[in-house]
Image (cartoon, rainbow, N blue to C red):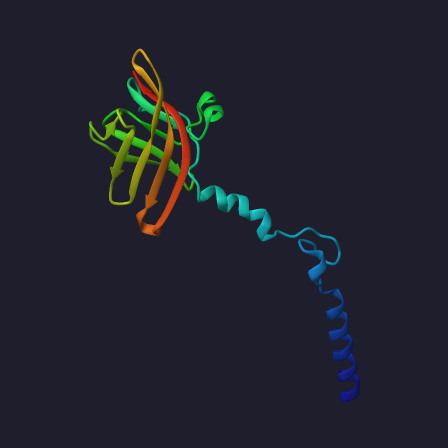
Length: 166
């Protein structure tokens, strides 16, 4: 009787072990039966995107005189911005999929040497660069936008291209 239970147990162990999927190092991203698996590599672009300033369209609250900057001329022309402000009340950026609205005061922007410094309890936003052209009431700029995220002790930065005007 003991021998019968032993053989039955042994048969069960062998059967269960033969049904188990095995992973090998030489087939990264696949199981032994060629079923694809999720890998860290496929998730990295999403993680990287969250660590950068993200683009967004002009916020509905911003009307009239404003500054708006994109990462490059192509994004600027397609109206995908990384920074927008309304000349004195609020500035907008997008991080981790969220639009962040930072209060600002008139005078936070010096167009003569193109510098901005904004700070609240969560972020410190700074922008610097140079004026590239001026037409009527519009000035074009090129520079660098840097955001310090205080809670994470992390800095994100991007080149910017855009304008301020009415």
